[in-house]
Amino acid sequence: MLEEPRSPDAEAAILGAVISSPDVLPKVATLTVDDFTDEVHRTIWQTILDLLKAGKSPEPLLLKEEARGKLTLSDILKLKERACFSASIEHYAGILRKKEHGRRLHHAITRAQAAFADGLDYEEIEQEVITSLARRSAGTGTTSAADVLDVEKLLGRKYLQPYVGLGINDLDMATGGIRAGEVCILAARTSVGKSMLAIISALACIGVCWNVLYWSGEMPREQIVKRILAYQSGVALKKFRDCTFNDYDKRDIRAAHAEIKDYLKYLRIDTEANTPGKLQQLARLEQLAGRGEYLIIDHAGRLTTDSAYRSDYSRMSEIANRLKDLAINLNIPILALWQLNRGAEGQKPTLADLRDTGQAEEVADTVILLSRDKKEKPEASLVKVEIAKARDSGELTEMDIPWLELIRRVGPKEKVTRKVVV
Image (cartoon, rainbow, N blue to C red; front, side, top):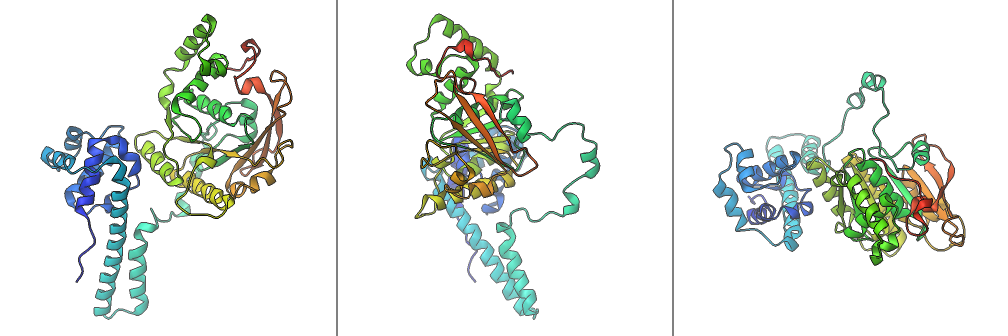
């Protein structure tokens, strides 16, 4: 009889790497206890997950204490000696997933052989095999509709269901915000203000202590924080790039930083998780740490996939579908910035332009299109905002937002009046 597939060495390599450097956790956040076979390893991984849920780092002493006598310090420290390199931890995680898949096959074969020996009906044997193989791939399983909604709790609610806003009152009133499990696509051509609107949304949410995960494939972390300070202070973004601040600018920047510094802890920035799968791992890890309530993706076109596609349409379609799955499975709202093609640069964008860039329109719960006449002077320019799709009874409408209120990059700051109140 064949032995069950297992790899204690790969298990030890991953656990040792996590204990030595918790920064690698996003790469293995989707592993479950069932991916480990050694009892000590299973206990350690479960304890690591428990610590993350409590917002604690998996340090050796904390692991020993949290395990309540199930682990010794020697068990934990031995694993540090077997740690793999950070660059190879995903390879070892892949080994564990394959071994776990093999164990399910092994278990199914064993159950089938026993069923044959017991003389069970073929249909019963087939059901045994299907159940064994589906246990992991089916996730947490189905939920009875009777258990989904508490009607009395719904009717007794005095406030709106929590949602994240885009930071502009008229827009939030029209869309109803973005709720858990929903994907809002903010689409535009280049240099219209997508990133700045995403940052305004992040500021509005951290101002009420929502935990925001901001992924950027376009800007380094420091540049994102500079944009936040530029928006809050009213100092032109160009001055942050060139460091040409006068005394008034420095005063305003210090004042802006003092206003928001206590809220910046609610904003987590990442620039490395460049696939939908890695984003899911990262978001799950943030949730385990008690964060990850809202995900902003800037922008979706910078994400890659493991599949080889002949067309960009197919690639973007997979990304759109994976993001929707992520929103539903982790029950979080997602704002995804989407780059429209340049085919009709001088024309107002439509949903048809979004259809040309994959299945984003089909997947999204809300679609917001931005456009601006770049020939107008910045101080007179308006950003045209169209809510082109609203699946959950949102309002399909259009509105204009002054360019200088959306992006603080040019023009005298005394003409800019909008500030985030925190």
